[in-house]
Image 1 (cartoon, one colour):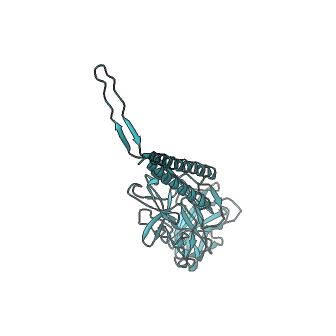
Image 2: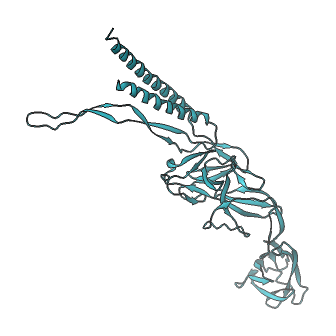
Length: 388
């Protein structure tokens, strides 16, 4: 039987695979985070008809004579080049600018994806369209994220409430240096909050002394201020009242004017989560009704030594394989991972002009191999006609 007949069959199969890969790329031209694939061919084992010989005496050497037995698909590789950005305006849509992958968990299996279209489910978890739960690190009550810990499901409960205890009070303004000793004291009332958000008041009293001004609260003296030419003399500028630091470093002591005010304090009453924003480092920052902003969680990203070794698992997700290398977890901004952008999605990196060209190449390759088969058939028919 003619070898060319089977070579043609192998060509048909290989180009059919190329058509399948190209068709899948075109079908996913609008799939967020999709990475196009390409087909590589290689020849199969060649049949030796004559071996090589070395030069001997007055005879020259001869080259080997081999006849190829067709073509096979060497592999289907994935192109992980960055796709273009599409702005959506949705806070839960995220895009990685770099080589990292989102980490999701579905049915106990860890998956990796470039598609950042996330939504909230009934359990307030951030999930992908196919139900994979976005993974990351949850912040503690103080808004601190421990990236050395294990990753877990990211949950943003809309009923989350926080209260910020007051730890510092800042005063600003001027205390009149020409006030008489024993003149009526100046009082400033500051609202402060404890860890539960309960409000209370601290009354600070400023009394003129021979050297400057004495500061006291309900419990007694907490400090004193002295001035030279209106400027505060070096010394302890922070007093403590009931465990709260009172910053007096901005208070001046010029004549006549009395303008002492409470510039601010860092506590707040209890507030409920209203919205969140995404930072470039992957931090999910919650905005609360009391005006407080605090980190709630940080999104974990993954990278691999060989991303092309990942196995497609459906749903625009991948799983690690023996040739992808071990997963390396990190956060946005870490080397080799990239940054995050909120309100945008990474679109498919399929190049339609290239794919349509590949369609033509695959079609012509298929046709040419079909001609090999028909030509071989005609040769066999001619051989059969030798006996009539």
